[in-house]
Image (tube, rainbow, N blue to C red; front, side, top):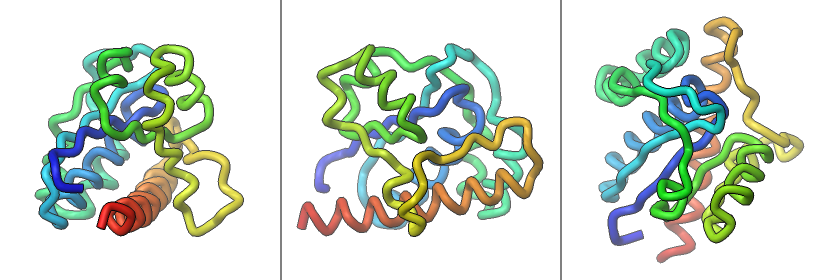
Length: 160
């Protein structure tokens, strides 16, 4: 990975999982000194909403610098142009990948099925914590962080 990476994180509402993933990814790229533009979007068409309160709290627990990434978040819809401009499309569930296939078939080869990088190889999705408490958001944050770490380690190793 030498040029600026363009990553889009996709979930359903773009208020829980994908904003947390963006905050974590931005921090990981910064820590690795890799230039990247990381954004998120949702498949449900929710526009202009802040990240869920517990998503913001869970990310804020990681420190002020990473918290800034989620505080500025406003939800947006996935669009074919966003998908086509991305180098990597990070999805949280198979239905998000299906959405990519239907709306931007040429972008399907860019999909990163995030749950496949979990230590628990039986996972079939990154569960949506919407409507749950802070503990569920913390668990989701930890899983997303673990998966991102593994994906970036694998991706960087593959590009060396």
